[in-house]
Length: 249
Image 1 (cartoon, rainbow, N blue to C red):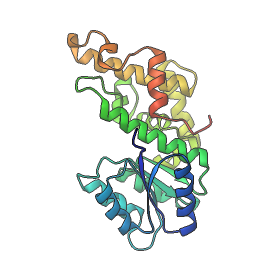
Image 2: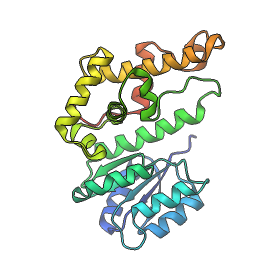
Image 3: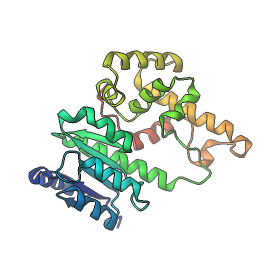
Image 4: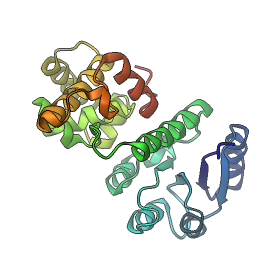
């Protein structure tokens, strides 16, 4: 029998914690619950969960402190980390993402958004763990997109677009207005020769993987042999397994 993924939920509001645990239990996850940041860090070190879902604003050790301790310990540094944030905390959110959080959800959380975010991060971690040593590496940071001829800021926007963020969220994360984000997207579409977000994501992945394939020379004769086919269908399958678009755009 397959072992269900273990999720650690750190939330100081008892009713919110109980609601989250109830929802995730119904979906078959193995669960750990912590009522504060200190207990959350203790459980993370002891249990090594597959993912951490953590509130930002908590008494004592807040979400930023939890993230810092988790990322600074080699035993827990690679665990996917998703923030829960109230609507008034969006400015502080940039700090958390810069510390190494993988994603965030705004409370009150929609059940579908919660499940999509968790499964996307768990799937991405699974893809990373089973990757062959000599396999082509999909882009995992904004810098990877610079090979496509994008500016640094355009690469940042494209990176968060791939994470499923809409214009407003991208603006919050990068401290840009929605209008500026839209202008960057227009430039990205133009440079990639595409007309919409989905095509931009496909083109970016294909372009980055093809650049890496060429850079590694004749030792890679067929991308299918190393686990990352460059065909649109298989690339889309990979994309859907790793990055679930919640922007609705």
